[in-house]
Image 1: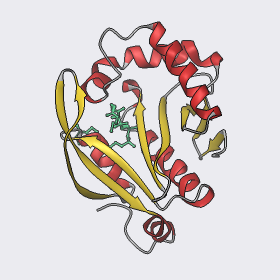
Image 2 (image 1 turned 90 degrees about the horizontal axis):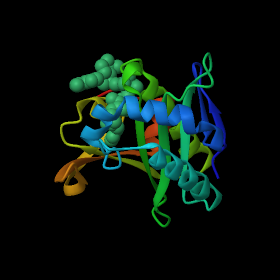
Image 3 (image 1 turned 90 degrees about the vertical axis):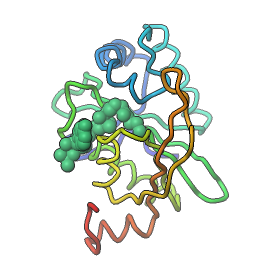
Length: 194
Ligand SMILES: CC(C)(COP(=O)(O)OP(=O)(O)OC[C@H]1O[C@@H](n2cnc3c(N)ncnc32)[C@H](O)[C@@H]1OP(=O)(O)O)[C@@H](O)C(=O)NCCC(=O)NCCS
């Protein structure tokens, strides 16, 4: 099981608790116009009940070891939800995990997502023993593609009509990073971006 709290220089990633309702709800609703473009759950009629359901499900999934969601916080402002990063197993046999993430719109392009995902990759490969981590990114989501590139992921190909977003079936790019690639990047053997 991953650790409930993970630190980076600037950030703290922590599992969700009931105390997070208000700050999560505010961040999600303020960011809806952008989240709605790329994430199936972020409907424009998203309401407080959806936040309550999300946090309840997140706590339950953690307990049942199905999925691990983290709230991203600045260490300097620990009560404010800045974004989410999640990890779940897609193949036990293949030791494959998938990641998902979002960052509140008013904090974009400050390196927050990259820093948070990088920390969770360390946990996935070094503590949890995954062999491969994947991302599914909607075609056209260039900010998310950029995060994958910066972290050294490889573009594997296109998954056709993978998710229904705003009533349309959207093609997604499958990106992946292997444990040995992650370790080589950490040792500085290959460039961090391609
Ligand atoms: C994708 C997302 C999580 C990135 O979060 P972030 O904290 O801004 O990410 P980072 O700052 O670590 O990196 C973003 C990179 O994309 C770049 N970028 C931002 N918008 C871009 C765009 N429209 N086209 C190309 N690059 C873009 C930034 O400049 C930055 O690259 P750089 O460091 O080389 O300058 C955020 O945009 C988001 O929440 N989007 C909506 C939800 C979403 O798409 N989630 C991912 C689903 S797969």
